[in-house]
Length: 375
Image (cartoon, rainbow, N blue to C red; front, side, top):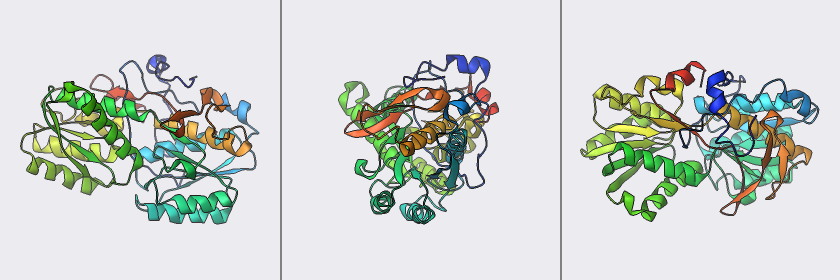
């Protein structure tokens, strides 16, 4: 259904409503997390790739094996969709999926879950890291025990895992978010970023990419980043941080929240208060539908995201390929990801990655459609 060059594949998706699997949690253990990205309007979210047709091709490949996913934290819809896709792919391959949702979005909470999985003797551990460096020791312990390690959504140091399953390139996400701020602000004025935790590797990489893009082009010279605030992927703290930004910067024009928890919290604050400040970032349509619109009654003109079910599917198939030896994580490795097609490991700034593809722009013309599909 889709190859590694994914940005073009989804025009057909919207016409045939293929994202049926985008809602709900696929496991009693499953929870959610938050982070997202950007792309062109032509690239729609990918279709649900966990169809039954994928099962025969991979049916026996994961048989008798156990594949674990450690999400960022419990209670995060973003991670729930990731977990659903992961579980579907693992089970289509004949394996058993274990999904662990830490009580909080911290490295310590993830370390506890990973230690438990080491004791259980799972075959692989996939982690959406809350900290780039703090997990290294426990991941080394897991690797020493013969467990294959890979990351998804948010990476760790490259020497701590075999490969990173990434939703889109960091540079593309940063550039797209910056361009959204520029557009919504009318090319000039103040904007702020409402991030997740200060240790979130993907959030930090996207923010640095935004800054680098702004410095590289005089087009953005009149656009001023006044603060990066951290809501820690907690609704109440994200709400408090949004309110603080409004109080500190009376001339603020735009808030960019590259996290599904943060953008939903900020949208409510801005809309309920009737603020003239506008919002963009990465969000789930089902959580943002009432806030998206171009008029003054809505706080968010548009936002971006990718298909989290597909990201989970790809991560699941990548876990199976790694355990089976079909994939080592070396640059140039190729492998089959069920009905999703063939993927290749690439080098991105010295780190090995498998990239899902381009995210999608959600605005008033399509957000309800995707919310109705459960995304």
